[in-house]
Length: 342
Image (cartoon, rainbow, N blue to C red; front, top):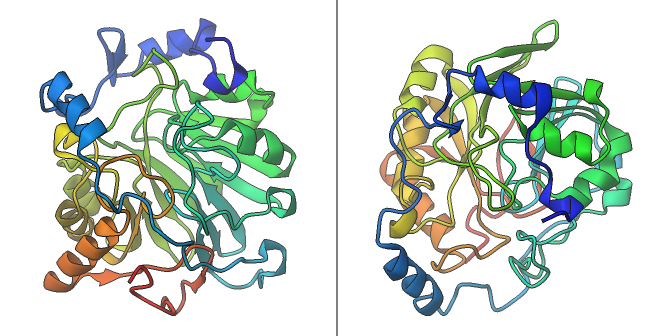
């Protein structure tokens, strides 16, 4: 339990600040509405997880992809690059953001767990340019990679995260002044006309046997020319409509779509719920993530994209489904092959 990659539990002044949060009760952070991690009997869920995997849980071929040169991007353009699962790069009005970077390790503390699909390793970590802000939605291994964050520390201006997550970062050598640690519903003024607003999600946290002791987040990013919702991991709930009514409309909503299962339906959305959430948010475009790189549930690797595409068409929701590494011009958001997984 003392391996550095496991992180460190909040303590001292940080823990005292956590205890004052209105979202921390009975010794842990709480979701807005009751959210059991499992909605079926544990034994049944475990048996199903072990024995009822799709024969296409992993792609039988290397995934089509592009390898972007992050150092050769036009700094005057507004761009997005998805790196698979929930890691992506945003260049907006002259600032660079990196969300939930997982580039080196697997999606597990175990070396044989959560192995990346072939064709998804498109980032040369040594070549990552200076990043103004890293946004971390929560501290699970498939969103917060110890090895990646150690490697890029010198190239990061600030890290924005939820309460308690800063304990991991400081344990890993990040200076205290480099970490902006917030509760839900707080506003961070990055510069004139640049604002990050922290918002709820319906999920949980933890890097070891201790859970719910760090706060999971979604973010509203307001720039001079864009309004973007960064969803993190979340089950479907009332917060999407509330955020849409208060902060929408959004040019883009980035929402998790993948690793769902009936046994944990309150902490991850099914594709139909993903589309409904984007409608609740009043988002012009939906970018579905949380698939395409790791197999953490039993569904076929391409099912989340196929299903969200079907539901988006039926609800007239505009969808962005780029290949991993493809550069998207956010001023003219189109993709080369909209159904690349086929």
